[in-house]
Length: 180
Length: 70
Image (tube, rainbow over the protein chains, first blue to last red):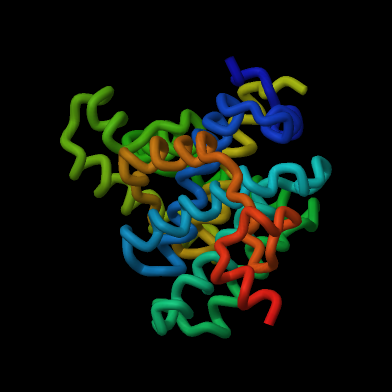
């Protein structure tokens, strides 16, 4: 139903209180937010709490969202603040050094130089095309088709552990290529 | 605005790029998380609690009324 709707239109529907559109927003960005929260908190339980808080805030503050603003920038900023608040409330420090965290998070969130982004995209597409076929398939199914690792294991009829190991190898190769 | 397969690839590349920049190896979110999140849309907005007496003074507890007038 929402396949043909872009983010701006989706957010317009959410602003009007459309719950199905909100569900779609989770389908598009739930994993990104969850993994970002996991990186910041270091535990699955806390990442789940933070992700829940992020989406609650998005729903609660939907009327304040400016449609022209990039949705990922807005969501990841809320996620960063929610994770830092949670860690402070529990008197815990982030798994990575706080200064390093701020630097990485801000650099990541504020990536808005189109030329730089296009260069990175081109490098990434090239890196993906150089992966072995079975690793390329996993990357495509996860990132371009939005499948979960469990769904991939079921659809390819391979163990979940195999999916994870292929993904690990692929990410490691992409990271090396990306850093060059 | 239509979300074409090109848009899907763009989105996928963005997520992958962010994951690589943050050194994230993606894991699946817990299965029940979606349900918890969607249930938040069912919650009624909480009303702000006021500590001041309401306009209907007679409706107040007599003890509180007494303290209020002290």
